[in-house]
Length: 322
Image (cartoon, rainbow, N blue to C red; front, side, top):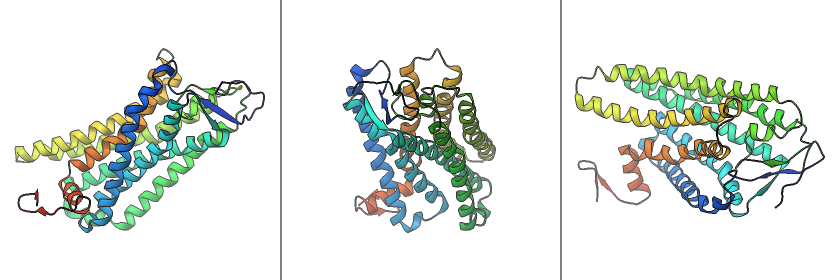
């Protein structure tokens, strides 16, 4: 499909070209992304299934994990099918309305991902630092209120991004040098000043991601202070191993997402295909890694997987399937 200029301030749609300058190899790129997509869908679906069907996993910790899995499914499903279509039929056309709907869901699911990471960090803090009050602190009423607050926060702040962007006049090129309808990649096509859109986008990023990462960092510092006081070196090593894995995926998510937001404002020297690659990976890698970090390393999840998916019994004494 050839890229065309449009004379209307509201074109019929946009042309997504994928990775700028890499059109000749995009078919090959579809292979690892397809594998990552299938794995993320399968692994997160299994987590939701296992947590739902295992009564012993009906606790706040595993509830958070299943909600994270649902968000991860939504996040990668928002961009991967369209991306794979670009790789097969480069470039790909997306309608005006679909572009901004996709934009909303990308930022809404990203905000929910961040929110759940915050709650999971707080869950670990209470479990380690105040275990006797765990059930009373993380009550059903508290969880309901905090999730409603996070959903409202995400809806209000992120919904305005595509709304404001859709009101811009698009009277020049309709070609988006990206794999999906990223806010600034689309807004830069407008034939008007987009300073306010840029400022609002970065303010939302720091209001959600910036605040959340500060809270998570403080929470894990408090957790590590308690861990360092443990008498057993084996217990300390286990806690460090668990916290280290969690912090790796958390920092990856926040560093790459904030990098994506900042490159549009201050990273003119970053090659476009490198920027787009980071913009894609910050949305796709966490959904693929979260099941490994949070589920595979958890004995209760592994046992429930053997029981409900593979239909094998696990000997509680030996932890060996029989």
